[in-house]
Structure formats: structure tokens, C-alpha cells
Amino acid sequence: MTFLAPLAAALAITLPAIVALYFLRIRRPTRIVPALDLWPDQIRDRQANVPWQRLRFSWLLLLQLLVAAVLVAAAVQPALSASASLAPHTIVLIDASASMQAKDVEPSRLDEAKRQVGAMIDQLGPQDRMTLIAVQSTARIVGSGSGDHDALHRALNAIAPANGPADLSAALSLASGIVRAGEESRAYLFSDGILEPLRTSFANGLPFPIEYRRVGVSGENVGLTSLVVRAGAQSRAAYLRVHNFGQQPRSFTLEWRSDAGLIDVRSVSLAAGQAEDLALPVPDAANTVTARIEAKDNFRLDDSVTAVARAPRAFHVLLVTPGNVFLEQALRLRTDFQLDVIAPAAYRSSTSYAMTVFDRYSPSAMPDAPFVMVDPPAGSPLAGGAQVGIGRVRASDAGDPLLNNVSLQDVHIAKSQDMRASTFGRALITSLQTPLVLVRDAPFRQVLVGFDIHDSDLPLRIGFPVLMQNLSEWMLPPSVPSRSFHPDETVTIVPENGAKTVTVVRPDGSRRQLATGSIATFADTDLLGVYMVEQTVSGNTDRSWFAVNLFSDTTSQLVPVDRLALPPSKVFSTAQTNHRGLIQVWPWIALLALVLVLAEWLAFHRGL
Image 1 (cartoon, rainbow, N blue to C red):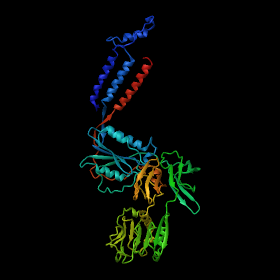
Image 2 (cartoon, rainbow, N blue to C red):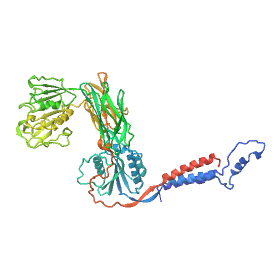
Image 3 (cartoon, helix red, strand yellow):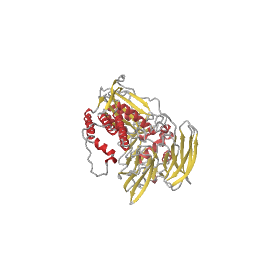
Image 4 (cartoon, one colour):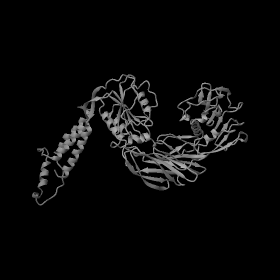
């Protein structure tokens, strides 16, 4: 046995002090009584307090000495030696994402993972180190290379579950960066395996071997996985998807509300693995609608979802074209666009449009606003060089968010202006011969297309309307997006013209102030529910809403993954070293002291 605080043994001086107190005479006031025979107990007590007489047996004295001895034993912090199979530097990655809040293990998957990690901390030897990393949408180090058991336990207990996904790529990159050259390290991942796919390439391997420790046993869950509001000519309706991910049939109650109050309550029954789409009414005056189920299952995050029912603010957009059905149809997909289409001869410079699209036409003066220029005429300020034949079309950056869900693999372009000398902006889509689509952020977000889209099969691909949607949302994002976001997803907010203040009110009532002069990004979206954006314009307060919901079939499925495909180790994986670890036993000794104190209290009140 090892004592971690041997100097605390000096507290043992309290033992003789307690015994000495029993020899002291107790001072009592003098009272005249008719006869001492009536006070036998007081006579014996008086005799017991005569100094230096033979010490009489007392249960109270025995219990007090035991309490003092046990407290001294706890103070020196005894620890038992134990054989521990840990590397000198142990890296623990703890999944603290949404699915780890499941309660198929009590009290939750995250708490069970923390219990197992706590046992590993207790096995650390005097020379061992441990690093704790919380795996969430943003991985972070919570305990850095410490061997202090108490500090590691405090860091472990401070890990709180998040509602977002688990970014394993970021966590592994973080762990790789803290390993010293030549250091013997080993990593452990405590997770249910419901993680984001690895984005970063670990082709060279990790500087440590990693072991997956599965947490969780069941995938029984009923969840709400989608809620959208659609506006028709006469009314609005919401479409809700309910899914039973478990292996047993389930029946439950669905509650349907708007911000004005209860709308409907209905019973729903689903077979094992069954999903059902429900159409629900939306009142005309509703700003938000909420669906909630009383499933009483192991996972609560997908039992309530919210959608914004209020239509977003409309943008006035102008298309100047000699006739381009493809462009017109793609722009009309934005429900918040009020689109005007005119011929080039009818164009007059105007500032009333939020965005203008010029197709094969260039005005004498470009508007000071977002615009798209398609195939500018020769001799115009944005025109390129002579036409060149185009070979393979590709993205300049495959990871550019403007090309999300846009496939260029089967796109063919016959010819394009030579845009290699253009200083318009950066290339978004390019070829071996010339850049094809260029974008820029200043002075406004603007797009230049160097070819006539009729000279390509791009408009015949599903990627064309998606590309136009991505570009238009980038150039002209709605002031407050009314769609649903995932936890920890960034929301772009465009302050209204003349807005003096912009404030986001989170579901818990907390408020966040945003800048009013430019487009703002709001990333504090970890809570599920409705976020309200308040803008003060001309003395009036304008309110808009957006929602944050889980909406993840992968997470709601909850089934723990038995095996994970983890990156290999680039170092030779040696067997784990058995060394002498320590198991601290003083907390149990302190608990025994508490029991003895209670026993002493009972003995005193019973007159022992």
C-alpha cells in the first residue's frame, strides 16, 4: 500500500487529545439539594470527571476515537498497488454528441462512458499521463497531459453532452498533434459508434494505436425526423414524418401546437421499423408550429420538432434576357423571389431590384448590387477573349460550398470566352483551357459566367437548378432563413436596411447581440427549438424566426456500432505495458468515517 499524503499522519495527534478531554473536570454551577441519594447518576458522573482516575469504558469515547482514526487514515490517502495495462501517455476520446444522451444504459451512455474512463484514471501510475478529448461538433481538449487523478476526474465530470454530431476527424487530428516525437502513446475511443464519417485523410496513419470501446445496447426509439410547412393557393399545411426505429410496435400520443396554442391531439401506432407521413393543418396566424410525442423511450431529442410557418421576406429580382427559359425556371425555384423578366431593350438602370441577372447583355453601367453576368457581349467591360473549345469541366475546389450537391462529371460545354486574363474574381468552375464561372465577394457578391448556357448541356442536368440555388442564396441570402438547421450549424443573418440593433433570442431566453453593418454569422445554435431574431428598424421591432432540430435518421436510429473502421497506427503497435498502477481507497475510508459519525450521534442520543 502507498500513502499519497503521508504528512497528513500528523493529524493523529487528535487521538490523545480526545482521550485527554475525558480526564478534564467539567465545571458545573453549585446547587443546594435536600439529599444526594436522589441524584445517583450525577454523583457517578462527577466521580468520572475527577482527573487522572482510571479511565472508564464509554461507547462515545470509543466511537469518537474510531472516527478520528478513520479520518486520519483517509487524510494520508492510501492507495493500493495494481497492475495497469496503460501506455505512459493515454489519450481518451469521449463521444459527447447527441446520441450519447440515450438512456438504454443508466443513467445515460455518456455517464457510462465517463464511469469507465474514471476507472482508467484510477489505474494511472505515478509517471503516467492522460489526455481527455471531448468528441463533439467541435472537438476540444478537456484534460491536458496530466497525471493528477483529482484534476482528471474534475475534467471528466465537467464534460456535458451536446446536441450536435461527433466530429471524429477533428478529434483524431487534435490527438495526433499532442503526441510528442518518440512518445509511447495509446488512444481509446468511448462511443456508440454514431459518428460523422472521417473527412480528413489519415493515409500516413496515426502516431498511436487506437482502440474502440462500444457504449450502448439498444436501438429502440421513436422519433420525429422531418417537419416542413408548405403554402398553397388557399391554405398552408405541415408535413411531419414519424419513424419507429425499434424492433417492437409502438403506440403513442402526438400533440400538434402553434405559437398561439394547441391545435390537435391524436393517437399514432407504428409497426416495428415503420415510418408514416402526416399532413397537419397550419393556422393562418401561426408564426411557428411544434409537434411533440409522448413516446417514453430512451431518447428525448427527437420527440419534439419545430418549424417556422411564417413566409420569408420576398426579394425583387430582375432577369434581363433575350429569352432563356432555363434561367427563368431556375430562378423561380426560390419561393422568396419576386421575378421580373424583360428584354435587353427594355432595361433601365434601377436600384429597386435586390439582384439582377444579365443574360448575353451588358448595360452601360453595372448596378451597385449583386448581379449575375452570363456570356457578356464582346467589347463590354467584363467580356473575355476569343472563344475557345472546352474539354473536361471540373470544380476549382471540390469542397467549395457553392458546389454542394452539384455534379460536373457529365457536363459538356462546346465553347466559352477565354477568361484567363479576367480579374473579376476567383474561379468556381474551370477547364483545362479557361475558367468558366468566376465569383467575387466585393464590392458585392457577384457571378460571371463566360459561356452561353445554350452551348452546353448544363441546363439539362439536375445540378443546374441546384447551382443557381446555391449561388442565389450566397449572393442574396434571406434576412433570416426560415428553414430548419441542425445543432451547431452556422446561420447567416442579413440585417434589414437601416436596422439599428439585431438580437437573437435563444430557446432558453438568453440573448445574443449581432453587428448591424454587414452580413453576420450566428453559430451559437447548440440548443434545440425556436430562435427569434429581433431587428429594430425606424423605431419598430421586426421579428423573424428560425428553428434548430435534430433531424438525423442516423442519430435517431440509436443502434450502437459493433466495429469501427479506424485509421491504422504508423508506429509499431507493441503490446500494452503492464506497470504498477494505483487504486485510491481513501474515498471509501472517508465514507466509513461518515457512518461512524452517525453511529456516535445515535449513541449520544440514546444515552450510551
